[in-house]
Length: 557
Image (cartoon, rainbow, N blue to C red; front, side):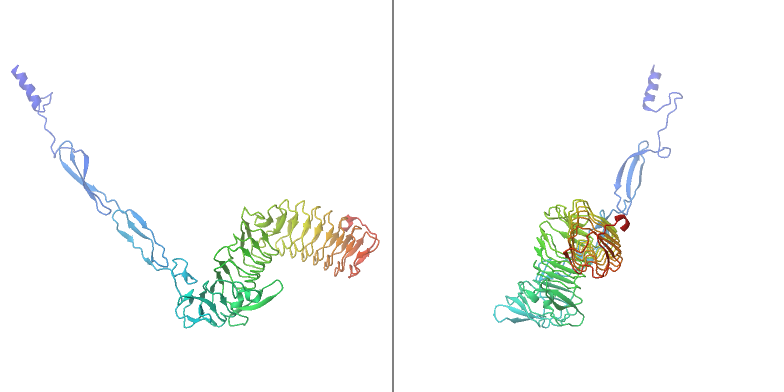
């Protein structure tokens, strides 16, 4: 019994093998296959240095360590700062967001120049005026005149005041033959005399409070060239400026001048007409109206004042602005005059505010809001074929004037009137079929359509006005409808290929020289003789005429 109790105690106290009663030896570091868990960070890793972690064997208690791999840099872009006219800027850089090491150091960007208009920087509102200008007290002792004086600046800024009095006058010799490239005239100036900037051969940009001599000038004094004068100088270009629909005056501008900024929104009649070197014209605010002839023949003009507030655009306002690409018509525009976009050879885009009550744009062409009147075809369009929108009843004068790319035009049923010169100069137009609803063809409507070979006339046509088909040199046959009442002067003159003409008995009026220089035409008249209201000179080229004749139309074609 005592021996058994001893054995049990030994088994409890010593690890004995139950089979052989051999004492089992515990693991030692030398013999243990260590297993580690519960690793502890002893030293954190950084962007560039390894860290250290440690653990203890769960069997033998041996401790160990191993490296914790470096994390590597976490790169971030340091945002750049745009420079202003008062603060330097910075370029972008690169840094690590963990250790803050900078890899690309931002560099300093110099301040931008001030943009002074009327002596005030439009960016920071700081005041500036050129140094060395000469100021002369006016006779009223309450204001000053300004002259170039000893100023050598390439950009001249005239202040609004001097000695706390306004600068109101620039005399005719104030800035003659100056070499600055830009000048800003303040709104305090009320008068700029004729030729004040004569001979400024290097001038590129000018900022003015008005166009011409003063804000309320009229006639020759109201146009832009007045301040440069009517005398030619070195490196000048002539500008024939219309100051009325009948009268014009020639002034001379610096050829280098391409930009004009106005600090008001009033642009007089013909203000910039004939200024062929000006590329950009701006106003401080959206202009309320565009006067007639305002930009006529501004062939270099690409940028125009904001028209979003304009209520009207006068006659010929942008005529022959051959570099103008787009026009945007605002919501309040209720009146667009005649020939406004005539000769705008590069114009490809006409947009109209969707809420405009008078006009709309379809495929960049201008229509009346109700779609009944076609007003203007974008002349820069190079398509050879065009289909007029359904619903159009009239085509206004000069709508397709000078469109040389068009070969075919499809007109909608319901069209009633083709106004004067509507298709004048469409030199590639091959044929035209007039819907039976057309009652009138206006004067010169197809004048100069030199490739036009065929015209199918409307069965409702009553009037062909003067010169309607003059110089249609490829036209061979004219079969006029039984509805026609009147043919105007020179209507089919200089149609050198015309060989057959049929005039129905319905025609009561024929003007003079209708077939002048259409020498080879044979004319078949249903009437037995010339009627009372036929001009004595209706056939001056003595073309052969067959009276009381109504040949088979099929044989004439």
